[in-house]
Image (cartoon, rainbow, N blue to C red):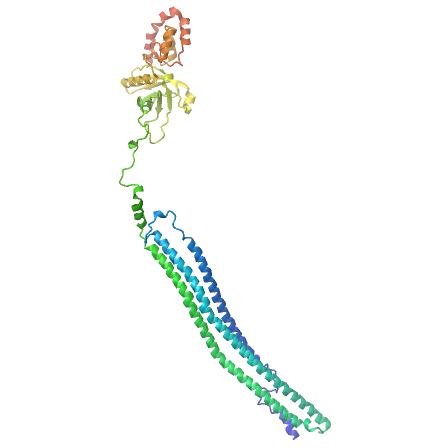
Length: 490
């Protein structure tokens, strides 16, 4: 019998492991399954966060589209220039306002639908996974505790067997009946059987849980698909609606004919637009105040040849000359009033000038240029030699100049070389009273036309006192000689 007792501990091959109390953690499988449920719970949590973020995005989009709507909420500035009916620019902007408001409403509705329809699906699934996790961890933990308890009991019984087998050898087999190794060994088998039953029950529970995981995960996938389908219908439908709204705005713009607004504008404001059938304006047809005033009409005007005042130049230059009622002789480049501003290049005030009688086609004027041009500042007082196109024309110019100067007596023929000498030779016969009377008319002497500033009564009196009566006799033949000399010079 002792031999049988030695073999009994070796008959444990039918247990779940080679050892009576294995070191394997019975919660290892359960821990793995629990961790898997935790992974599913986190995955569903990610989807919940995604939907919540989308919800916030659509809420923000709704507010941002309100800002967009404010940019076109006011009527068009200068709106009277656009047709207020449908089919024009004003109608197009009204279409934009309506569609933008629809985008605001669409995003707000999408936010509510995501919060009320899609998000609850994922929240319920989250709760199911959490409950499943609690179920697995709770049941496995209870079974693991029972196994641990059974294993501790078995371990104590095996340790007791070891103690009694050692006592048996030391005492020579004299033991109490309860300490008999045989009896204790049978107790080990009893407790080991109870342990194995607990372990097998736990194993069966784990197998059941594992088999249930397949169906549960299929359920989780199905619910996720359901949630994504609802998300697609809500968010995707909103995106399609937004696309349709933008397409409608595009169509409203494309339906406006290119000339729609212009035709309407012409119809409304045609009376204020330029009539293309009217002839263009002409300066000749324009009438303005004082256009025909007598002071604007020249006494005579036309082209004359004039010898240059520059002593280094030869020949004559052509210019356009005008004698005005203001008693000025003006020189212009030409008679064109349109290409450039007509400013006189020479202006002589005729009452202050000395004028000679015409000699054929030629006549002379001595005076000061008052045009305030650069050349007038350099030239000062100078004698101008004019050449008309004909003698008759020269006479016309002379008559007009005499009228402008206010002269009434006959003009003298001045000597072109020295007009002052001719004046001094012809004046001594005049007395003071006659000189003053003729000076008032712009004429001094029988043959000279001059201004009061050129010859004064003092000068005439000095000439008379200096020459006396004998000089008067010698002056008479000098006048014809001066005339002959002037003709020769001409």
